[in-house]
Each structure stands twice: as C-alpha cells, then as structure tokens.
Image 1 (cartoon, chains in turn purple, brown):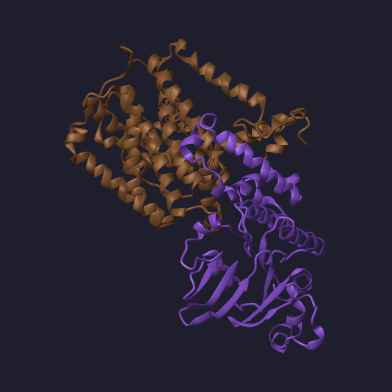
Image 2: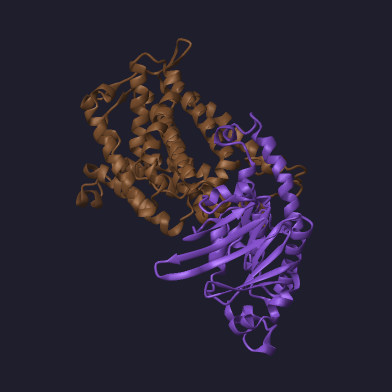
Length: 264
Length: 356
C-alpha cells in the first residue's frame, strides 16, 4: 500500500533520515519506534508531505507521491494527527471534524453563500450525519459544541483523531497518539486505534513511545535510530533484536518499562 | 461557542437541520427578523440625520464585514481596505457614466473590486503578518495614486459625479428611500457571510487562520484560500464603496486614504474579530463615536476646559484621538470586541435572576 524506497532527508549537514526503506501492507497496523531524534516524525512528515525527501521515493497505492503537495494527499486517502496538538483552537469540536470532510464536500463559497438554494444545506446535513457516527465512535458527544482550544489534553487528542478519521483515509498516520495520557486514556485510545484498523479497515502507521501498547497492538514494527532503519518485523522479533536492545530499549531486563514518561 | 450553555431549557433540537441554523434559538431569530422589520419603519420617523447615520453604518458595515472575513476569519491582514472601498465607489460611478443602470453597476463594481483585490491578494498567498501588512500598505498607496492619475476612470482630482439608485423609473435619491436600498444590501450581504461561515469554504478559512499546517493536511489549499479570502473581502469592500458612491452622488479622490483604512481595522477590532454581527456593531460604533465626541464638546463649550484647550476648533483632531483611544481601550479591556460583550449580556439575562 505504501512503499518508501531509500528515503533520505537532510537539513543542511544534518541527516534526519538515511536510506530508509519499508513497505506497509493494506490493513496493517505498522508502528515506528526509536529514541528521540531518531527521525520518526521526519519519516511521517515525508509521507504526509510536510517535508520532501532529499533522495528516494514514496509510493502510495502504486502512485509516486514523493513531490505531491500536502493538501493533495488528503484526496488520495492519507490522513494524519500531529505530535503536538494541531486543532483549530477557536472552532467548535464539530467544526473541527467537519473540516476533515473538506475534500469530500463539493459546495464552494458561491453555493455556500446561498445555503438554502443549490444544495449546500443538503450536503452539509448528510456529512453531519456521518461526522456524528465518528463522534459516537470516539465518545466525544458531550463536547461536540465546545471550543476545541478549551478541552483537556486527552480529549483534544481524541478530537484530532476524529478529524483525521473524518477524511475517510485509507492510510492514517498517528504521531504519538498516546503521549501525555494517563493509563485509562491510553487504554481507550488503543481500543480506538485497533477498532479503526479492524472495523473501519484503515491502514495505520503509528509512532508511539509506550512500548507496552506498541507490542500489544502492532502487526509489525520498524525501529529507527539516528535516521537509519535498524530493524523491522513482528513485535517479538524486534524485541529480540540485539541492535534494538542496545540502541533503544537499554538494558536487557528493562524491556517493558514505560519509556514514554522518561522521554516525552 | 458557549452555544450549549445558552440554549434555553425546552429547546430540543430534533434534527441536524435545527442544529445548524444561523440563529441559535427561535427567539433570537424572531428578534433579528423583528429588528429588520422595525428598521423598515425607521424612515417614518422623518429624522433625516438619524437616517443618514444609519445609511453610513450600513455601507461601512458591509465593507467592515469584508475586512473581518479577511482579518478576523482568515487571519490575514490588510491596511489597504479603504483603497478597495474606493475602487468599488469609482467603478460604480464609472459604469454609470458609461450608461450602466445603477441597479447593475453596484454588483458589477463589487466584481471589479474583487478582480483588483485578487491581483493585490496574490502576494497574500505567500506572505503573512508584518510582511503582508506592508504589502497591503503598498496596495493602498498604489491604488490611491492610481485614483489621482487615472482621469478616464476617476475624473482625476476633480472627482466623479454619479447618479442615484433607481429602479423602474423610481429614483432613490433621498435618505428615506435610499435607506431601503442599503438595508436590503446589508441583509443580503450579512446572510451571505453567515452562510459562508457555516459551510465548507468558510470553515476552511478559519482553519487556515487557526492552524495552517494541519489545515493543509486536511486537504485545504492554502494559496487558494488566502487569495479567495482577499477576493471575498474586496467584493464586500466594493459593494460598500458602490453604495457609498450612490449615496453621496459624488466620489472624490481624497476620501480613501490610509486613515480610512485604519478606521476599518478599528471597526472590526471594536466590533469583534471573527464575528459577523460584530462587524456591524463596530461600524455603528464608529459612526456614533464622532457624534458622541461632538456632544461632549458641545456640553463643555464655554467651560474652563474649552477655554484652555480650544476644543471647538480642534474637533476633527479630537475625533481622531477618540478613535485611537477607543482602539487602545478595546484592545486592553475587550479584545474580543462588542460582539463578545453582547454575548455576555445575553448570557447574563438568560440566567437572571439566578446568575450566581
């Protein structure tokens, strides 16, 4: 579904990514892990179009998207959430999620201004119905009219996920969906991600520091360190890998410590 | 925003349609429709001065709404709004001069201003903040200079005389009659804006303002929407300017200077950035402010303060100082503007007498 081939990204002399190649299969829940500064977010930014790789190519469903503009990728079916919250703070939660429908809506400003004529209202209401399904699914009914900027951290993360889901993406990129959450919120979030993957049929690429969650729900894991790929495979394989232990997980018997608290 | 808290008990929304109305409650809708109906009766009072103030507030309000769409909703900045207002005024006068009926020349002037606005709006797609402010400042001066030189278009320094609005042979050349023309435009333009803000492109504009990086990820083309915002803003400015032209029946080159542009910014800051109704509140405020200043000076005339400062002779300076003071005071004490204050008043009365 998504293939990255020899992707390198340089900022001046800094090598953020070096020759990273991997492929994500349809329906997969693929995690990228690695120490801070390893290039995980850079990789996701290359896929979502924030950065353009210095070398290498990225293909999505067989199409080369390396140089495609970020706003054109939503239409292809790529959605993402951000590591640092990136909601539209002054809009209501509902409007935030409706922005996610942007590329699916057809009525522009001309027909929008004459709301009742020309069908803009009909379209809005139809999409509202679908957005409400997403709101139900992520259990944020009680805040749908609240201003997004006023919500608690955990809720904002959930609204951001809702907004990305509203794009109806085939591939959803989650950049640290659980950072800064308490255990209960993490459990909820993990459940949402698994549901999105299994019931909504979305392919997921996730960056996450919480090794417990990564090992539990991922189908495959890729490990980056200093911009290089050092391992890829099933969670158990990766855990057993010598390089990974040395680079990321530290001592051999400290494998499942809560890394997120220590580093984020 | 505080939508839920302001919904009275017993107001059950049973469909998504009920939940996406412009006015939050049936009562507020009735009040709005009632106010417009009441305004229709205003000419009956026969107070021509009051009517002239309301007409001014009307066309300024339309132009201010345009600026608010650009500044308040899209988060861009423009210090050249008066120039676009002027383009609208001269375009309409120019078209009428060429034989186009005023009925058509007003919307056409809006479109012509849109075209001009788009040209100057193109850099807006790339620039932000201070740099954009300077670019629009350049637009202000370029257009002003154009007005002074392009005699074929503006009549040069002599200005342009134009005709009153007329329909089926009936001429709207008095305050009483022209009031209805402006009122109709105000209602239509404000409804357009309210509808825009609850549909796709309006949300996209706000998304660009709040977080342009994630807006881009949502499939929003930043260049397109920043330019579009400039276009819509200019359209409103053009309509406002055209209404102004056919009210005064004379358009002069000097009117559209930078001070006027700053006044438009003052209107939306005072009214409330990012609020459709706030634009009108700000325009009303700016129209009434000189009246208040005048009244204050009249009251003080002959007193010691007047003798010491010579207030009556300095009235025009005092007006500008009052505008400046109003901007500063609003920025400090009510940065969300009159619209926000209005919401708080409504919230207070909703809970009265159990507000604590």
